[in-house]
Structures are given as structure tokens and as C-alpha cells.
Length: 138
Image (cartoon, rainbow, N blue to C red; front, side, top):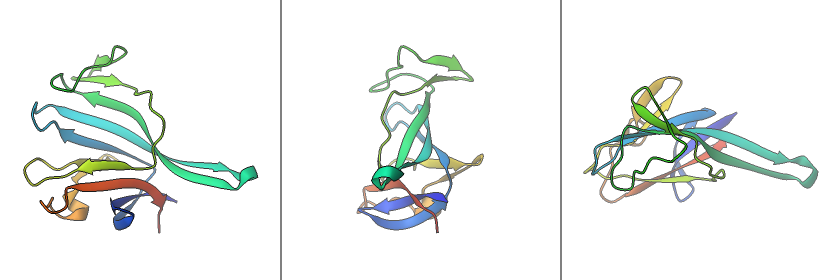
């Protein structure tokens, strides 16, 4: 089963069994909510013995505009947010900044949301980032 590993520099601090999730946060300056939906992908090319796990950003939503928050031309407005599908290639990991001075990221799965501190403890000034990557769940 696929899962999401949370940690830094390859060290796993927490592992969540899931195949998709959403990240939610509030822009630290503009105080506008952002949401991104991700899907874990297991890419295999058996004929060449290749396998890789990826994160694919499948949709994003933002409730308004501001500094560094331009709405894409192809976005549509629904349920109080601008929705769009980013044309981005899948990525091997996602690096998120964390700080005690700003609200923590929320990770949602199966309709339930928790701050990252639920799994990792509160943000600390000495550890300024966390990485999320797809992994095989234990």
C-alpha cells in the first residue's frame, strides 16, 4: 500500500497510509486560504525494471488574490474559491516551510483535517522545514 512519509533529508518522522491528500494553509501576509489536492502515483516500467513513486498536484484552490497569488486564466469560481488544475509534472517530494510564527499546515485525508503538529509536534525555530514524499506504507 502507498503511504505518505513526513520527515526531512530522508529521515521518516511519521508515515500515513493514504493514496491522496489535501494541504491547506493561510498565506502568512495576505491571510488568504490556499488548498491543494495531491495524489500519490506508483509508476512502474516492468520491461526496464524501473519503479518510482510520485506526488501529483491534481487541483488547487485559493479564496482571493494578493502578493504572489495570481489567479490563472483558466481558473473557475465555485464555492467561494478560485479552482484550477496546475499543468505541472509529478514531483518526488514536497518541501514545506514551518515556523512557530505562522499557522501550521493542515493535511486532510478521508474528509478529516489535522495540522502537521498532530503527527510531528509543533513547529520549532530550529527545524524550519518538513518534506512530504510518497513511500510504501508499513
